[in-house]
Structures are given as C-alpha cells and as structure tokens.
Amino acid sequence: MAEADVDTVDLETIVQGAHEKQELRLWLRMLSTTKLISQEVRRRLRNEFGATLPQFDLMAQLYREHSGLRLGELSKRTMVTNGNVTGLVERLEADGLVVRETPDDDRRVTVAKLTAKGDDLFATMAAAHESWVRDMMADLDPADVAALWSRIGAVKASVSNHLSGADFD
Amino acid sequence: MAEADVDTVDLETIVQGAHEKQELRLWLRMLSTTKLISQEVRRRLRNEFGATLPQFDLMAQLYREHSGLRLGELSKRTMVTNGNVTGLVERLEADGLVVRETPDDDRRVTVAKLTAKGDDLFATMAAAHESWVRDMMADLDPADVAALWSRIGAVKASVSNHLSGADFD
DNA sequence: CATCAATATTTGAAATGTCAAAGGAATAGC
DNA sequence: GCTATTCCTTTGACATTTCAAATATTGATG
Image (cartoon, rainbow over all chains, first blue to last red; front, side, top):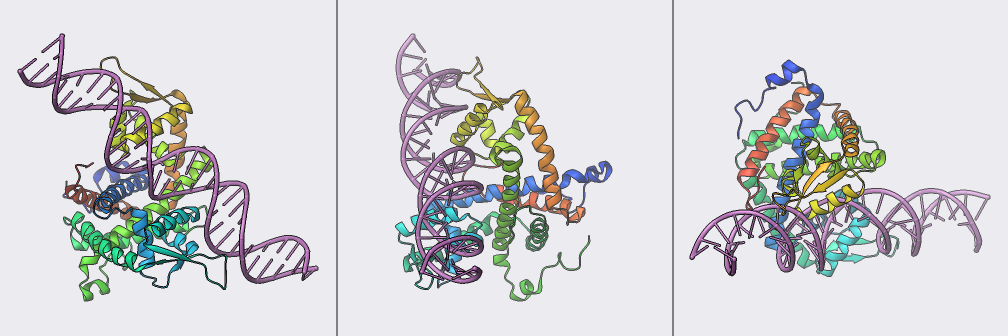
C-alpha cells in the first residue's frame, strides 16, 4: 500500500497536535517490520542451510575477525548475553563450524574462531542473505533506503543517550 | 527538517555506486536499533512490573478487544506462533491477568480475555511504556519521527509483497 | 604470600521462540 | 449418518533469550 504522501506529516497529526504518540507509533512499526523480516530470514536460513539467525549473526562477527574473538567481545557485538554466547558457540562447535581456544597468557579467556568449514558456509549464507534482503526491499526507492539508514542512525543515537542501564553501541 | 547532512545520500555511496549493499545496511541498522530499544523496554517492564515484553504485547491486543480474542487471532496479531501463544496465555492466566473460555457454538476455539486485574495492570504499564519510548527518542525532531513512520511503512509493504511463506500483516 | 577485588566464562531456572506432529471438533460429500 | 477433510489448539523437541549466582583466573594490596 504505497501511500501517496509518504513524506508528509499527515493532517491528523498537525490538527490534533498528537505528537506525544508519534514516537510510540514509530516504535511499534519498527518492531513489527523487524519481526517480519527476521522471520523471513530465519525461515530461509533454516530451510536452505539448517542454520539459525543468531548463529548466522555470530558467525558474521567471526568472519571478519579471522583471528577469532573472545566470547565477551562476541557478546557485545551480537548484543547477546554472555550466557547465551556460551550455548551458541557450543552448538556451533559441535557442528564443526567453530573452534574454541584458551590462550596461555590469560586462561580466563575463551576465543572462538571459524573453522575452514565454517568460513565456507558463512560465505555462502552471507551471499544468499544479502540477496534475500535486497529482494524483500525491491519496491523501495534506493534514495529512500539511504535516507532511512541515516535517520535510523539518529534514532539509535538518541536511544543510546537515554538508556537506564549502562549499555550502548 | 532540521539537519545538514542526515538526509543526504553520502558521497561514499554515490562514488562507489554501492547501491547493492544499501538494503543490507538498512536491515542491519534496523535490527540493531530495534534490539536496543527492546532490551531497554524489557528491562524496565521486568524491573517495574515483573512483566515480559511478549506478555505486554499480548495484553495490548486483548486490551483493545474487550470481548476477547481467539488464540489463533492473537497469534496473528502478535506475530507469535500458535504453540507459543498457548504457553503465554497459560502463564498470564496463572497470574490472574487473563481468563480462557470455550464458546458453546464452537468448542474447538479458546478465547482469551483480560480480567479486571489484567485490564488495570495493562493500563498502567501502557502509560509507562509510552513515556519510556518518548524519552528514548527525545533527541529526535518530531517531523523526523513522522517521516520515519511513513517510510518504514513503505519498507513493511515491500517486504510483505516479497515473502516466500504465506504471511503478511 | 595470602587475600581481596576485578575480569571472563559457565551454569541454572524460567520464559520465549520455532517447527512438526497429534488431538479434538466442525463441516462437506457421499 | 459416516467418513474425509479442514480448522483450531495443544504438545513435544529443541534453540534462544534473560537474569542471577557460581566458578575460575588474574592482578593488586597488605
């Protein structure tokens, strides 16, 4: 339902001055849209590769750090809790996609690294993933895509400034 | 519209002509921003009300349908699978926030409805929730918020048109 | 060197998430 | 009226999610 006035503040808003609820509407729409895309990506990852989205996400971080990452660092980058990373890496290791190592200079640490098999699989999945996303957004004007990217960056910045816990990008 | 730069397609993009990856970048940014807000909302729901986000979401749907909703309908509206709705409603019922009924005219169906207690609690949580979101987005220009809402609507529409499964809003 | 604090990961309980398969109940066709 | 199909929900297996508590290791302090 591509609306005609995609870019204007609608009358309703101006007349009623209902600015207070705009943020809520935006949040709900972001959430439902993200859920929609996630579910589609998840379904395809599962059907075509037998992988899950969190696994894909974790492997993406390892893919660009060929030397591996400590679990705590993985936790920050994937926005997944420590305890969760443990289980994710465990399953990926069981599938032979990742290896865990403990460096000798600090034996508290566990470093996860992609295996050759994991590296190959991720490269294949990443290419597919990118094309799925492009297809899903095929109806959009590229300029809109770029503009959205910027503006959502502003949203992220504002949110990061107003968190109660100590947590930010 | 209040910015120098936020709205322009950046040089990098123009020069490299890397339009193919713009959709991917947008998706990743939407995902991380949504995760950030979700985590904050979750933390506050938990700390202040002992509730979870999915519970809040489910109660929101029941709040506006005073006569209740069938579980299948709840599943569609919350974008949660059937099996999951069963467990959610079970727990909410155990807490006295929701009741389940089976209408006589179709005994396959289960209808969930907010109790008075659930109705009161949700009203309180919803007000708090709205103010949390407004606070998190406090740095944004209201016009940007409205524009984002529209444009993300376009994203959602495009995605809905390109799903592999039979699933849309 | 013994201890205390800080760091890094694991573990455990409870909730949410998916899918596929199974259950009961209503409807269609014969 | 009987059967087959369809509809709605539940169940079961497994993965992910959070938080809090426990564990292990390092570094700093006395």
